[in-house]
Image (cartoon, rainbow, N blue to C red):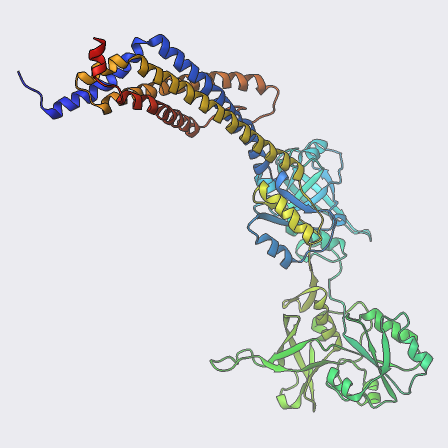
Length: 630
């Protein structure tokens, strides 16, 4: 017979203890079943409540987060927003996307379906790549020649994806153009309840520009060329004699000027770089913190009609540098040479009368229909530059940190220090103070372009960010529309249900702990003799104390298993009964696998904690108690 070693004996005891714990539970199966069912009855409602939180509330949160309609913010009133300002807003961490908008009056178009006689006038809204409204509803962002329509518009015109529509765009003077587009998507009602058509931002901008009366050359839409008007910083008026007091006061009546006084030679030279005209009198007309335009010049001319006046508008806010030879670049020399430039346009007779330099391009054009900028690209250069007539130079004109590199043809020279160009050219460049300009080298045109947008659609990163963005815009004095009430209701529901869940969970857990503690503690007290006999048979305190713990784990696992089974049965009933009443895309009550696993861990940990008092009581049982009872 082999005598077991101490290690073998300890291993036998380790295997024996779980078997004894399980056998004891089986022996008292009625009592064990009652405890298991009592704990399962506590856990099952908790799982159902947690399932509703994961199902209904999380579905609603998901709908709000994924449906960009609730994350959208847009200004209530139309006002101009510069591209730089919009780019700054887009760079915020709480902003997901920002789509500029066009003027509402320019966004209305007439739509005729390819097959059908119905006609509709929806709002046209611009869209760009990554538009959350389209992507969040599973719709492809349209390209040029494509569009997305709202469900309301699709229903009224019987449109479906793949259909073609005819878009008519008119303007006040009767011009009408037509464009064909293919429908590539239909927005659901929840995304947009209006009659709306979504097209590319470039197409929407072209529609707005066309309605302003300008041609869109790349689309062959007719219209005028958006050449900039002339803007001047002030004006001198010269004539052969002084004006009377009454005539001088007329210079500030309905002309836009606030003062008219005799000019000083030094002031004239500092502003124009030229000697003051050798005539009877020269007056300086000033404005208040603004520029003057052609209408102001014509108003002064009309006030003094018949007096032989000469108008000398000036621009003193433009700085210049020139590049005589574009290849004159080496390691030590910059190709740009700072210089001074002045604008002057006089007829030969006016030049003789004033004693000012003769300019080949002639008198000031006081007409709104200016020719192309290339017709003004002439320059009278200082003799010190040594440039021949017919040569070309590149002049960089800078105003308000914006510059334009413009070519000029040398048409003569003079003995002064400044380069003289037509005042019309400086007047057009000076307009960049108020309007955004671009220069097209191919056409030689200086053109006005869009300086800003009249609105925007913006989407927050999260629904929680909407309130902060709304407050930010209010501080910027911009009234915006946001779905704060719907978001507030959901967040309040989420907080309330979370508090309710934890309140019920705490009460349930405390009840479960109390039941477990009472059951296990009572079992130990009831079986003091049995525990004493186990100690007499050689089991240590640790082995004896492990019995209640093992039994608690078994009870917990059986209880959570029954609770999970009950949860699945009841959640199936809930999801089936309410499926017809609620338009849900997911189950009303469900639990993900990780939540179920976490529930098992929490239940087991709670059971182990509850068994510690019984385990401690088991260690205090003296083996002698079993002998005394014998």
